[in-house]
Amino acid sequence: MRRAVRLVARHARVAMRTLGEAIFGVASPAGRDRVKRIAGVLGMTEGVVPTLPTVGPDELTSDGTPISLFGLEPRDGNVSLLEVTVLSRLVREHAPMAIFEIGTFDGRTTLNLAANAPDDAVVYTLDLPANKPTAYALAPADYHFVNKPASGARLAGTPYAARVTQLYGDSATFDFSPYRAEFVFVDGSHAYEYVMSDSMRALELVGSGPGVIVWHDYAGWDGVTRALHELAATDPRFASLRWIRGTSLVLLVVGRGTRV
Image 1 (tube, rainbow, N blue to C red):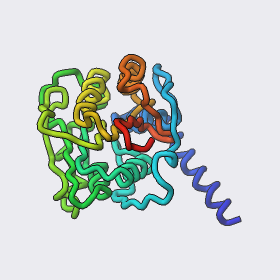
Image 2: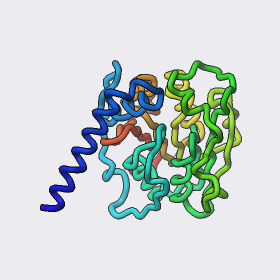
Image 3: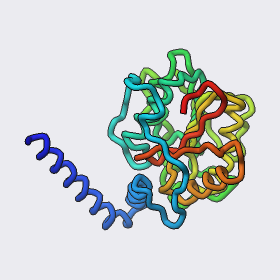
């Protein structure tokens, strides 16, 4: 009985918080981003209906895959707790020796990728410096995530920071040629042109595989959703894109020997 009461109380708090975000979130870029992310998890977009085939989180990794999680409380712009759990399980399952993240932001995802990778793995994370000219126009809400005091603030000072190499630049013009990766996380600009460009760079990083590419913010940002739909429909290399249920993550498995 107590458990049922706690469950009802929790759902009531979530409902009230969500209602508050829907009413008052329009007042700030951060609030609008939170509403957009809630809409994405619910499969609601501002015009582009999500149509990618889905896969359940528990179908992606072996049962009981142990993970370590840090920074459990998400902040504006972070992946959700379920999303960071899925990402951590994928990394622990596939044990990539090289990980590349496009879009560092505050380093929370970077920290969890590094913490769940093999001890001798390396994580590269690329972030756009504030006030740097860009090859393409950013999505208007992107500026909220670009203009920050420092990249990777939640990673700094942790035991896993030594595994991470911080890179800076515009992902559309950055020279990716010296790098290879077995796991790529695409979480940069939400503008259509950037998602298309970042997706091609991610595929180049993984090469023929085996490897895994994961995108963030599908079904919540039209630029991301439209780009992934176009890639899935027009490029056979992206034909097996899968939307991970309950999240805004999209998965692509590249090469043989990699579990879906």
